[in-house]
View 1 (cartoon, rainbow, N blue to C red):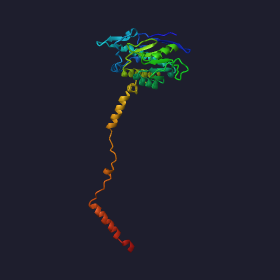
View 2: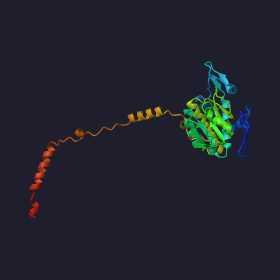
View 3: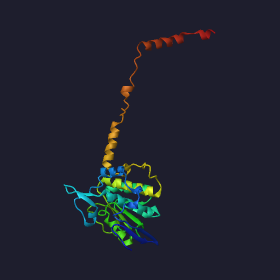
View 4: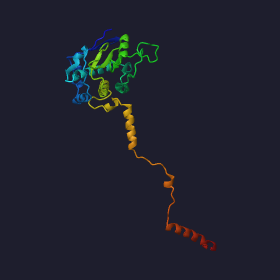
Length: 286
């Protein structure tokens, strides 16, 4: 078994999967996989291209420039290439359930949940239980053929165990992320809640397009808002504001609604009418 930092060459379970990548070529050498202007605007709006002030040596090739405040700017051209390559790797796995998306960071938990919902893969949101890939006695033991990692630094336990069982790893990597045991690194901002949601949304869309589930010419009907992180406190606050803006119904007050009705002159006429009815004896005369 052989690992590569910027490509995958995996042989397991009698099947051979070889995916090669060249930085000088565009993904697929076809214009179909080229990003549109709207895609680039979405990536810029979510600040996918903004890294950190620290750069590790393997990630230096993905850095385009450095701002005056020390923040490194990633090359969106390389980000898009690696994103398309990751989608091709995911589609190459015959059984979608053999793919597992992992995110211990709260900003990516909702994204991996939606990614697994639309692609049919497994997901682990929250703490990764040690031994999930190596301990067969464990209740949550699994044998995936491909891992998708949100943050190599936070999800280091899953990456370490993947090296023991020869499982390829696709990871969203920032400028300071370690690339040990990472087979396919997607350079991006993996700390922003909007950036992570946008990347998972684009990856999901591209996987479904390559599978033929959705048409490439038409926009995807699923909005990116479903992949974005939502703060439970903000949701509760909005619900309280919505409830306060609704019409407030007053409670039933017996003293207010059970007051006697003042009929005035009409009440006297009713009594007189009742007396006249009793005075009539015409029926008996018949």
